[in-house]
Amino acid sequence: MTDLSLSDQAIAGKTAPPSEARALRLPTQWIGVAPFFIFAVMFLILPTLYLMLGAFQNDAGEFTFENIAALAQPSIVAAYWISIKVSLASALIGAFAGLAIAIAIVRGGLPEWIRSATLTFSGVASNFAGVPLAFAFLATLGRLGLATVILNTLFGLNIYAHGFNILSFWGLTLTYVYFQIPLMVVIIVPAIDGLKKEWGEAAATLGATTAQYWRMVVIPVIWPSFLGTVILLFANAFGAIATAYALTGSSLNIVPILLYAQIRGDVLHNAHLGYAIAFGMIVITGLANVFYIWFRTRSERWLK
Amino acid sequence: MKTGRFWAWVVFILGAAYFFIPLIATVEFSMRMRRGAYSFDAYQIVLGDARFQATFTYSVIAAIFTIVLGVLIVVPAAYWIRLRLPQIRPVVEFITLLPLVIPAIVIVFGYIRMYGSNSWLPFLGNDTATNALLVIGYATLALPYMYRAVDTGLRTIDVRTLTEAAQILGAGWGTIITRVILPNVLIAVLSGAFLTFAIVIGEFTMASLLNRPAFGPYLQNIGANRAYEPAALAIIAFAITWGCMSLIQILSRFAPKSANRPN
Image (cartoon, rainbow over all chains, first blue to last red; front, side, top):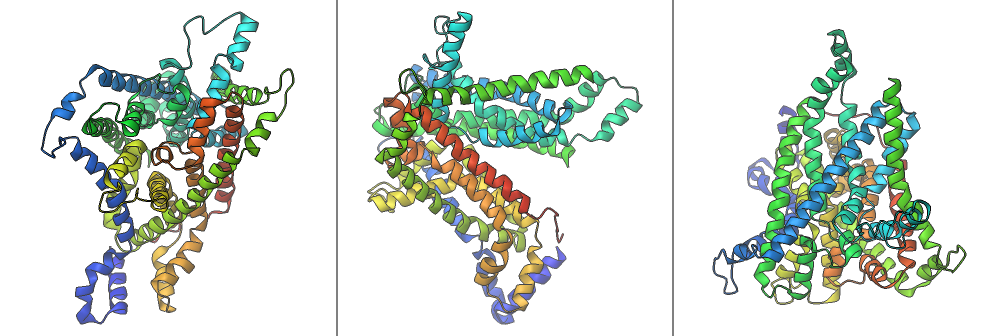
């Protein structure tokens, strides 16, 4: 901190004579971050606050809880519920599968090129979302998709006759997992790398079996970052709309699609109900991120 | 250890199957257009479609403006925080993470209601202003990635010494940022730029709700109306994402590795 105040003086002395330095200090101090804060307030914070306040107002601008109460109608509750289920299922499946892959490539004794190839591919696949991902899964598991056809002709298994449908809860979950697993791999590999070799040696010296080492050292250390990432994956899936919309149209009524329809055409016939739906989404992803930050700070104690 | 390696292979192969089967299926599907033979007809039709060219160009231009706007906002802020205001770093980091908390659809909904034609700042009043609003929205989506990339780049150089040296040589703030700091973090900025490009190029929600003729809404429209073209477009989109990520990896080889921190 001392050299900071030194450079402060140096700069203040350069830009203004001492008598004016005090008056000028505050504005010059903030000028570099001003564009950032103006941008953030105008295009991130104010629009969000506007919706959040709107959720508690009626058409006349009076304060009310009616919009929030109106969220309790069955169609909206069902939309929230299926969104939460899809996000939670895809986050959990993605997290465990991603963890397994991460452990396999870091600790499994596989050749080095597999690790780097997997990490590169994960970087790509975690960003391969939206409309094209839906196309890829329609081409795979749609009624005429390659996997559907092969399962039917080679194994006589008609998955559509057995109740599978790409335009359903499991279809959407399976599609979301495609970007959830790589995201988990990208985030959790550094955490597994952070496990120090000395801990394994120390455990072995004290007579621990491999199982004990995993149960009493590895899992407690990576647990917070694992849980934190699960929550991040949840929020990631919860706000996503493009994949679901391109995959299912509006046949699967998740919250973002409901809100999309409401913004386009006021399908709920109450503008402020749209605000309340947006408010509900912010509350859910916000809560998720509070937990995420909490777990993150806990995990950073170990991984420094 | 033998069994451990066996299970590692099993996990890896299962994972590889899950990730490659959809890609293979999509390639196969995209080539099925001509009856009885594999062909690239779907790609020809897509690439020759005037709407594909128009919307793709639109999105590329939007992405370039987004990158420029992102750099203008993020680089001075990240630099200034390292140099003079380290105490507000947690606040800025929190703000840059907000776009991961607030879904894109909520952000754009806020824009539509706040900056409508009758508001104090009518962004939706004409096309140019709406295009600007789309770029602004994209810049908020890219904010977490851009800030992290630039901040990581700044960490590897000694910001304070470079600044003071430039000042001693008589440089003003504009010169310092454009000719001293920016060249030093150029690779980090480019990494952020390619990631931004990958995110923006096929973005659907914001472009669709602002009624812009962008690539994302075009993709959705083709998906709803055609059979084989969507598969071809998915492969093209995957190739673009792959290209952006490869460029980032190649660039990272040129980035300075040692953290030369002043404090």
